[in-house]
Amino acid sequence: MASIERTAYPRQREQLSDEELEVQFGPTDEESALTFKETIGDSARLTFLVMLKTRQQLGYFPLLGEVPKQITAFLADALGLPPDTACSMPGSRPRHFSGIGDLSAPTWVFALTAPPVNS
Image (cartoon, rainbow, N blue to C red; front, side):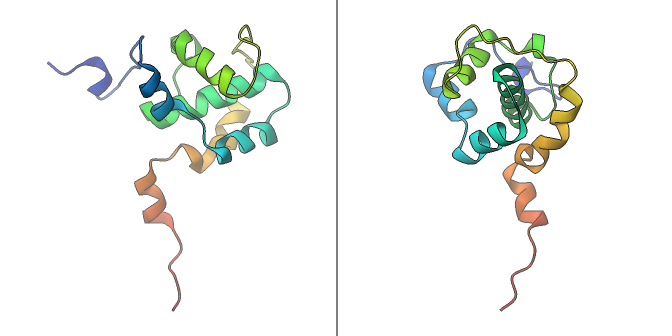
């Protein structure tokens, strides 16, 4: 039987190593810049980045309550936010979906959608 993180509807494991957190959830400079550009306030920033990074890993937007606290705490630290920052802004969630856009697409999608290079 396949493990839950390898099924058609994967879920994130509850415990990840520090290396796994960094590789899978460490925000790039572009992602951090987008987070600060698209949001106002600590809670909105954390919510946006959690949604972005979990979408990249799982392929869908999970409910915020399903995201392990270890991931939320790691991302809060990556943004320089206080560790007790809440990850919940009900009105912002639909707005964040459009802000995340193509950054959440797997890298192979960029190769398919890149404009042709004229020689």
